[in-house]
Structure formats: structure tokens, C-alpha cells
Length: 249
Image (cartoon, rainbow, N blue to C red; front, side):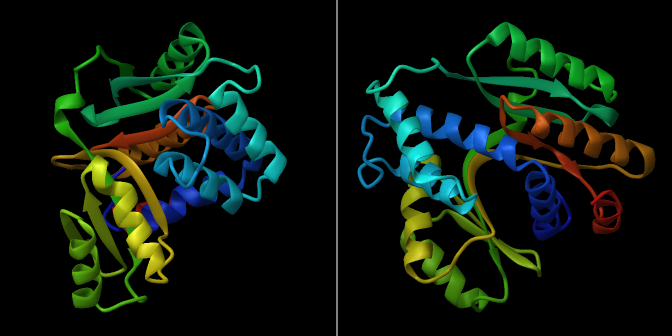
């Protein structure tokens, strides 16, 4: 979801996640398992995606033994569910483009649930490729603008390999290629800066601003998708004023 203020967008998403800690654990376990399997190593120091997944799990206060079991399921040391990553595309209220990334052990169940959510909140699930062309896959790191000056933060980000940095007043948005995401994130953390949010996501090329009922309905669609256990990330070309975001928080 793109918003007028990235900080308010993150607060909206974080507030929803804090209210459903059990679902956070479920999503963390899936990501750790996938990362351990696809990254070629169960050692977080040798597998950047796994390192981030483990750090996210620890930030959510997941027990170490739960993390270890998820890693071993990914590497095949323990038997477990066979997860796969599937992306769905669709339209929300007002023709908003929506990309839904999932990790699932049952495609039929997941697509049925995603289709139902779209329909319930005034959208519809589309065909593969229907909206994907409107997005670019990039690393996105959000940092509180108060931690460093813009010049210092820009220099740090670019030296680490970032492609661009945007200052929206409240936060810095550091953008990277997917391949450089983990090295840029490590460089920022090594500089003593803890990001508000860091993920590889789909960034819209352009945004559409919604107001009133359509904006409220789109937020409900976003939250319902994000609340689904199989959904790992939701991206859209939806832009909303901070005032509307705060009303829905």
C-alpha cells in the first residue's frame, strides 16, 4: 500500500500486526522455512534472506526453539509442510491495482480465500499479468527521518549500493534492487540505524488517490488480505491522505 506518508502507512500495518501476534508467528515460520530451503543454507550468516527472517522472528519475540525447528524443516532435517510462493493479481475499489504475495501449502484453498476477500470488499481477482506490469520489484527500507540528516543518510545508502532515497518529511525511503537489498540493509544496521520497516516488495510506477468511501473500502480490503495466514505481502497503487489513514487506525 502506498500512502502520502510512508510512516503512517507503516504504523497502520504495524498496528494491525500487533493485534494478531499469533498470525505473525505463523507468517514468520513460513518465511523462515522458505528462506532456509531456497537460500541453499540453514546458516543465517550464509543466507541473507534467512538472516532477515530470523531477525524478524526474534523481533516478534518468537522462541529460539521454534525458529530452529522452522529452519530444520526448510533444510529437510525435520519433516514438515511443503510451502510454495504464489503471487495473485487483482483490482480493488476504484480500479486500484493489487498484488498479493502468498506462501501456501494448498493453492486451491488460498486462491479461494483470496478471491472471496476481493469480492467481499468491492474488488475482483484478475488473471496473471493483469496488473503486474504496473509494478517494479524493489527493496524498500523505511527509516525515521530524525535519526540522521538527509545528506548523511543519502551518502550511507548510496555507498552501500542503494538506487535511490526519497524524503517525505517524516521518513527516508531507501530503494534498492532485490539483489542488493540485504547488503544495503546490513550496512544501515551496521551504522547503528534500526529501520522502521524493510522488505522486498512491489513498488507501483504510479499511484491513484482515493477519498471517502472508496478509500475506506480499500483499506478494509488491504487489512483483510494482510490478515490472511497465507499472505506475506500486499502491494497496491493506492494513495491515501494521512487523515483518512488515521481515522482507520
